[in-house]
Length: 486
Image 1 (cartoon, rainbow, N blue to C red):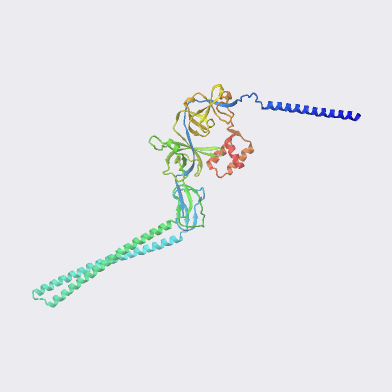
Image 2 (image 1 turned 135 degrees about the vertical axis):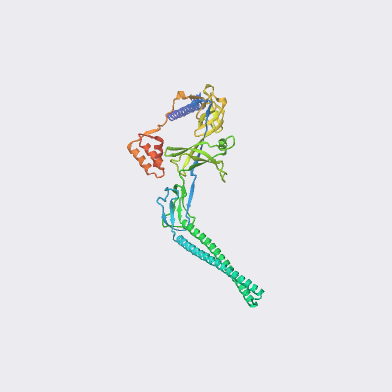
């Protein structure tokens, strides 16, 4: 009986425990379902407002600046080639890369021994021909006198024949005497003919001697030319480049040994697109002589020089497009042949346009306009020019309305913004244009500039003068230190 009672109590306790566990599990599951239902239910969303810089779009007159990149060239460049073959026995002082020479200066001399020997031989032949001509002239004079003497003797023989014939007609003379006189007259005529033949030969000898002199003179002139070609002289004043010869080297005829460049006559060759080229033409379709600004960036120190647009290329090279233009530099200080420069030209002014940052316009030429309740609207504009970080647009319907200056991926039509206007935002902080250098930093910069052989002397002098000042341009310092660390 006791066993039965204990078994019933145990079953009751087990049932109670199982029921409590089931009730606890159901409670937990119901709580989780409520939690999941609350998470899936959308909450009350709050509109996000972004801050963007805006500016009123006001019409103005803007002058587009056409910017291109070009290369500095010399308008006078001469290839120096060896005029003859032989051994280089003499070089001028300063015959090296960058050496300055004057017009007519002797640059190089090739061993003239062989050419001098040929010239001496031609001179000796010339003197021999002159002696032959003098001898022929003397022989001609003697032949002329011999002809005169023979003609005189023939005249005497003719008068003697006439006298004998007259005596024979009067019966005083004999026929034998007449025959003797006729024979003597015929002999005298034959002698005159022989002397004239000798005179003709003497005249021919003089002509041959004259021809021989002409030939010897040509040979002597040729020998003088060959001898002169053993010397190479500068055609104009300039500087040398690409020098590849030293004294004692054997050179071949017409071998290039250097280039002579005129550093005072420089021009810039730069390429523009066909559209840009068409905008530069005047009403007559001609390229005007527009002013050009040439900028050379040297370690942050811009070297500028004025130039004048002079001409365009006569043909478009194969594989190229656009037009190749040339501008002659008015000031060449600081520029060298081969410099990569920036070229800036002012185009005709544009009226009723607006100048905006390039970030204000997207790829489809649309801008964001501030509308009612500070919400953004998209508007189409006409893009006229892109220059540096700005664009020139034309949008008359938007005049007086506020434009977002910098589009971002989160901004679009319908987005509400907090407009930041120039009057409210104030001027942005800009980096200082000049900095003060401590002595160690200044010394390192000066040492680097002085040891750099690629900087032109006048530009280097200007940079050193600025580095020695109390305040140094920050851009130049940054560029020099970037090069020092590279």
